[in-house]
Length: 236
Ligand SMILES: Nc1ncnc2c1ncn2[C@@H]1O[C@H](COP(=O)(O)OP(=O)(O)OP(=O)(O)O)[C@@H](O)[C@H]1O
Image 1 (tube, rainbow, N blue to C red):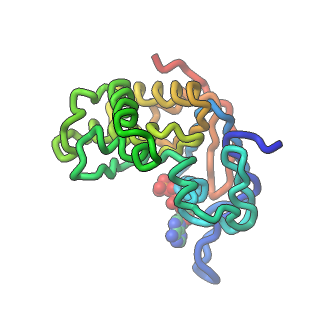
Image 2: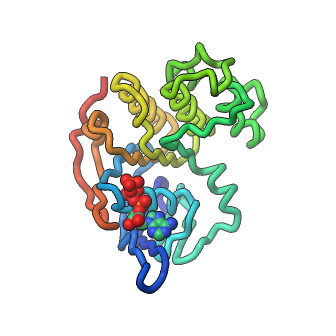
């Protein structure tokens, strides 16, 4: 039986050829169980973004194996024909920059993905408002993105990444533009989501405030991951 969550085995990624070849990932192994929130930390250029892009089916690894939510998606080649559908149905992305759609209001920015996936509009908007409330930005539900502060935009983008309840969430520096109270509340929400919906979550971060909250971390150096036990400190 193939496990749920995220499993990466012997993953490598090379960019370029010959003299300009870069070995960005070398034999990476990683597991994240459903319901678990794992940190991915490492210096600039160590391979964090490359690993998230491979897992998010944005770029192809050079070799190795990746399993997402009980499906082998890559085994030295893609085993999934429709990578767009894989991204839409299985993976929630939360980026450093919010990338909201400028001509949709806050609620519709969050509700759009479930609407596109066939959830009735009313239910999609209800789920959107529930998350906007949890992220303390519901009072801006009818505003347009340009009318929000940077931190508010980021919280809306986090709600959008969570609203489809994907089995996997990949977050790249999600708390970077937030103050420490808001950063902690985002981490609390991601932990709640993980437990409630059995989501496997990877958070790439440099944020010293949130690193002690992880129970388990992967430290990446020069494309090689090292598993570490975190403090798992309560974030209340
Ligand atoms: N498209 C590309 N072409 C060639 N080399 C690349 C490409 N993207 C990344 N690299 C190289 O791969 C290595 C890993 O880069 P990556 O962006 O994954 O690091 P990172 O840990 O995310 O860094 P940062 O914290 O600075 O964002 C680096 O040496 C980088 O220069």
